Length: 272
Length: 280
Image (cartoon, rainbow over the protein chains, first blue to last red):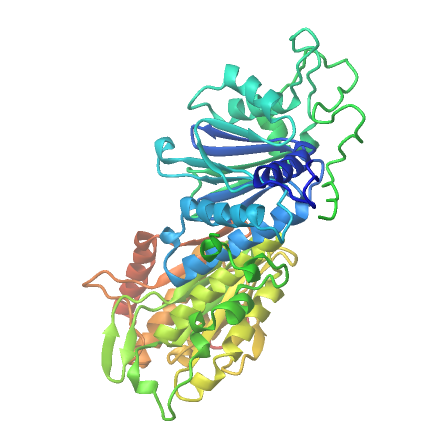
């Protein structure tokens, strides 16, 4: 870092530092997968806590998923619920859209990222919205700096995002049933490439450590969000065998050598 | 910066899980009860909804309302809906100033759903009943000017494993009712009918029939309550709630019950005869 001119830091360097800081925080968390299946959107994450959710309901057809610092994304989630409920109450339920919510999040994350007064949020978000048909489903991915990407088919965020996305890229198929989409997502989250590029180190994530929720078009209620209980999950996943079922638990790929292994807890941010 | 479209800080601040409280702080104009009104009686300005009846039975609870709204001597609407689902396991029926009541129901529905989403669990049955009491209490000023809203609240309590009914007064007083209850202008006739028709081993069909009979009696003696409209095929809104959830009974099912009830009244206009002495 340049300190040569009385503490002057170029804007490029400042933004890069902030981005590195946010990325580092995010990379320590476990991944979340968002996946389109025949009847809507599926969200799967590895989350040993049954109480602290990474995937949540925002509105009738809108869901929220996040990785990173819990207190930060929890604030964003609550803001989203308030925003959606307020809009639905003052206009109509149909006037609450995922696009509007993604926009509000993008503006918020963007202005926090570029304002000097606040530390950047160490979070990434999914905002998913289902339509009347699969073609109308939307999955937005938002990054810590307020960028929005309109994803198609599947998307991954969090620590091992690239590994998991690579696994999905080879195997993802459109219009899959809930069961097969779920199996694919669970396998992808447990995937870690072996030393020679084989699947040697894949883990089978226990059912109790999976947090799964769907936006399901076929639900009779107006509220399409539903969590899938461990019992139903076990039934949907069926018999799960990994090539490395007998192998000891693989090391977390998200943790760089020398770092404390991730406990799923958000990292404590250094003061700015 | 793009701060103008950023989510306001108050939205991001943890704190209340109540939608009504949040709106009261951040957008008070949205609340139905927060408007100041000039002095005087405003009761004749807007339509009034009339009779709501609820009946419990083993395994659930049924609530129904007639379809009439009146403004003085005029029928303002023939097919108004006065019974609404509050959430998956409860429903609310409203008597009184229709406009305010419908708005209050919307606020109450949002309140329950909002709490559920923020907290990740649903409110207890008593918690829901208390929240509704708080919303009614805020309306006291308007009630004193003739714009009263009197709801009836019913739902299935998973902890107790039974259907429960709560009634309210305009000051927000909350009273749990046993077996059955009715509110609105025709309520005394409906309650009288249910006294004679109710038994504690009713099944769902029996409870629905008893409720349609009670509404028929209310319409028979109260001009503000609408009976089954056979020419237009408009029948009461009936909401059934069990441990599996709640749903509005389809119109054709209610029509079938109503047709049977009306058929019986063709033979005996005052309805079924109750035993003169003793219990069953």
